Structures are given as structure tokens and as C-alpha cells.
Length: 383
Ligand SMILES: [Fe+2]
Image 1 (tube, rainbow, N blue to C red):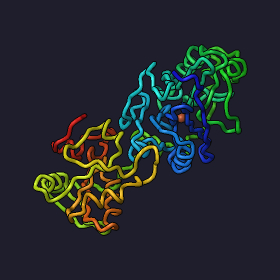
Image 2 (cartoon, rainbow, N blue to C red; image 1 turned 120 degrees about the vertical axis):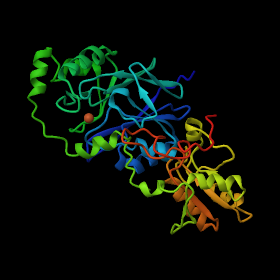
Image 3 (cartoon, rainbow, N blue to C red; image 1 turned 180 degrees about the vertical axis):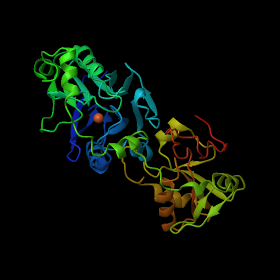
């Protein structure tokens, strides 16, 4: 059991005034990212790399209306496990959080607290150790304020209950880390908010409801774009498209690599010894989602380095040294294109397998239903 105390690194997106948090165990360097913003993906990668962190989780406090999350990209490229509140209907999140659920990282764990009000599904994440406690409050509790309750299944009554009966019942010294601040303030405490928060201090439920009903806030600028995108963890699947699903045993030539093959044809080539199957997903993704038998595991990008796998070049050339074709498989057929392009530059006859292992998300943001290796009935196993 570690005696170290968890570290909180706060990051700010000026365009949306959003705070993103990296919370980590300084001993094991296992880390969690809370409410990542897609425009800040490179910044976040740089920080994670500089600190040598191993990112375990990408968490959402709710389906945001003001920015788009990078959780889907973090999962796609780096094998991070995504989690979001069950009541937010973010179907692409690998873990659907319920009240009280623990998310372990290193020697610590965050606890999900269901705090409806800003949205019906909204959650806060609480971290308690003997030395300190922290609560990441998303758009529920803000410094001297709270999230609006007038759209996206919001409820002033539920908000009042979440603030006064859930968050204000946490230990008074708990540090409050909000999802936004528009005045440059970084954090607060439960005791400070209980005493001074203008929305709740000395206000009963009826007074609170009157305040919330009369805020007359403008509609968030990006709501029409951000909410649908965030319901699929920020992924916009316009690559590929319907044409790629047309023919069962097809191959199409590509500009910068040998071509795109259907999963069926790729498997036929592998079985008849015409090609080597290379799974370019990360080790973590394979472990969580499933393995393809007979595939060589060679990640294109791998945690924690977050860069192209340094041994990719050498190993792909070694695999194809007898001039054999390689067929590359990733999660949804995006990363495998980048890997095929690189292999081609190295003189390898490299094909991209269309749709990847899981295919694109469907209209309800569920993966594995529209296509991909597994859906098409090709061999795979969980462990
Ligand atoms: Fe929000």
C-alpha cells in the first residue's frame, strides 16, 4: 500500500473555459484524465509524456454541450479505457458508471457520485485518502455557482439536492475542482462553497429554483455540434463510409499503400499463406476487446510512449522479409491505414483491413454491430 498522496494536475482550455484534470499516483504513475478536450489532445499528450504517466481511464462528468471530448481518440490511439455516467447515454464509453462505482488507478480509486441537476446523468468523482480529499465536480458545483439546469434534462430541484445532500455532505476540507471557471479561479473547498456559494448559501429549495429559472442564459454556442459528438466519445466517423462495406471478398488499390481489403479476403489470404496478419492495436486494446488468433501483435502506437512504436519499422520489415504481403488490422480501420502507409515506405507490400476489429459505431453509438472482423464472424477470442 502506497503512502504517497495522489497528485492533481489542472489544465485549461481557454476557448471553452474548461478544466481538464490529470489525477495520478506519483509512485506508480498510473493516471486518470477527466473531461479531456479534443482541441487540447496534443497538449495533453505532451504533459502525459513529460510526466511519464500511464493513462488508465478517460472519464466524462457528463455529455458536454460546450466542447468536444477527446476520450474516443484516447481510446482509439492509445487504448485508454473510457468511462461515462450511465445516465448520459454515451454508448461508446467502455464502462457505464453507476453511483458508487470505483475507478482504480495505482494505489488509489475515484468514486463516482451521481449528482443529477445540470444533466440527469451528471456525476462527480470523489477521491479520498488519509492525507487529502478531492472532488471533481464537472458542471454540478462551480466556484460560487453551479451548472445551468435549463436544458439537456437539467433539473433545478435535482441540482439543489445534489449540492446540499451529496456534495456538501463530503468532508469540509475536500478540495473542489470544477469543470469550468470563467474568472480565473482554479479550486475551492466544500466548506467554502457551503458558506459562500451565492446559489445555495442561505437559500432554500424554492429560492434556489427561482434563481435558476431566471438566469436567462444564452444557448451554448456549440451545443448542436458538441452534444451529438460527445454521445460517441467525440469520434466522427466519416472515414471509410458505406462503399467499404459493399463486397465481401474485395480489394481496392490505394494511393500510398498496397490497398484496402475486406476482412473476409484478408482472412482467406492468411489461411492460404498468402499474407501475414498483423494486429496494430495496442496491447491494452487487445486485452479488453479481444484477440485474433494467428495475428502477429505489433502495435502502431503503444502506451505509455504515445508515439509510433519505436520497433514498428524493424519488426514489420522482419515479418515481411520473404516478400510476403501483410494485412493490417486495427480497431476501426483508421490506424491501420497510417501503419500501412509507413510499411509501404519501408518496401513492404502492406494492405489495410477495412472496418478493423470492431467497425464503426452505429446510430446509438454502439460498436461492433455495423461491421468489422468480429461482427463478420471471423475468428477471435476474448483472452
Ligand atoms: Fe455541461
